[in-house]
Image (cartoon, rainbow, N blue to C red; front, side, top):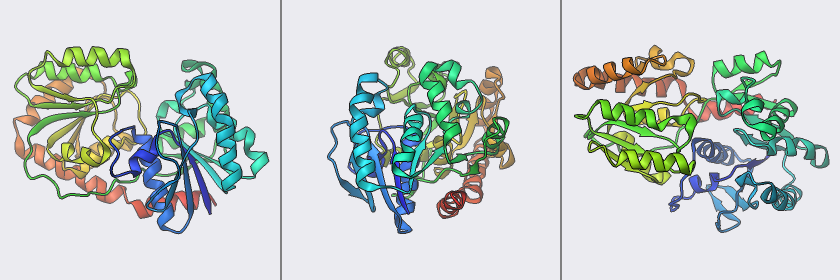
Length: 360
């Protein structure tokens, strides 16, 4: 089969020499593309124009420059339209796939009769399908929701998302996230107590992590927070500079980020909405437990005793974090539980086959 992924920066996740970074959705597109190519499928990633070289091939995946479709600006979308359609003409894919929200999903649904492909949507965030997206994201959100409804195939990343699709009377398959393979062996020493990783977006609530750091001045903390919302980033950076027990990085390339998880006792999640977070997967690879303020996807953190979910109670998060960091044996057991969760629930070959089966 021929697959065509529209994804802003997934090509950087494929490039071992890239210094640019992006988010979890783009990483998942890159990983799925590699798995499909390894099975003999033809795969193209149409990426946003950020000055990258066109027509580079990584692990059997062709990467193309599709213009500045990813900026969200109306004029950029209009200018990118001929480039995207030209690539569709050139490759004539069987399936066009999008992971996460974009108004382009609706545009691709309108183009489908001209090219004969099947449109595939993979859900990134729970909020994309809980009925609130159109209200919170204006006309772009409403177009996106129409695109979800018009897609030929839809995939949830958790049982909860599958339930949300059901509430909308939309069918879907279940596809769990893939794992970024390790390049180097795990670091032996845990030199970071608390690690926070995520794009600087309000939905990730990075300021709550700074609140936690401030409550625990004796704890070694690290934050990786690529700027996206520039206003929020300035607030985060200014406040982080006042916390002597915190090291903050604005950007860490994909191929270097795992060592930060390896060195951490715990990953902290403050997001208010996710699908199945990549950060939890990489934390589990690094033997780090997971301390979550709100989210426990499908109850896996609790099931595998991989950490702790405070169910929205910030004071409880502070209390349990302080207690766990004083008990290295329990912290180590939680890291082992996270590793067990990884082994039992997340397997690249099995989940790629689940994706392909869902297309039948």
